[in-house]
Length: 294
Image (tube, rainbow, N blue to C red; front, side):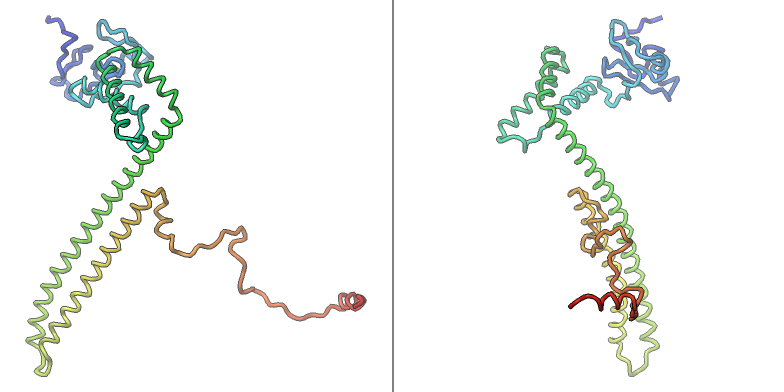
């Protein structure tokens, strides 16, 4: 039996259980960011089911956890590792160009990021680089949290706008198709009506008037659909502006409508009272009023 070279494991083979995709097409490989050693999902469930366990690769002393395993995205593990390291560094070094006074300062900031990524990727002076990253995160903790929160909000806005654009394109495509179909039907109908009306028209009726009437009916129907398309575009622009300005889309659409002030009495004061006061003279109160000196 040929001994497996653990440093050059085939792309379609699990080095732990020796299962490959030829015999098991449904097999999936996972990696752990601690060491980036490839293991199939069945071995991950079997080895790490009871808790943390050392990596099954020889000469690898990393203790791995099951919840840290993830699916491999890139075929080249070096690219996979670089993406993870860059994502980790950028979560700390998350300033934008607007945060710097000059472009030179921003370029120096980017060079510092690239230097940290390179050191972590190629394991150059790991301890000093990790300490440098940790010290920066402590000194800029407040700004880092603020920038990360702003980035999450921007990402949520981007997702909402993408969803609105897809919905708008679908509705616009449908409405445009209806307009084109309606115009085609009206043109065919116009031709048929022209022939019928000209053939059956009275001698005292001008054929030009017949044509103008048919054109007016066709324009009325197509303009109605075009107005719907224009309102759809205006609605999409209003919703997109509301998302960008952190507003509620419903409030942005109804901001021009009259607002009723809140009151806990189920509505504001009644303008028209539901009752009518009739005149009544109380002898007791009249006697008291009469005793008051003027």
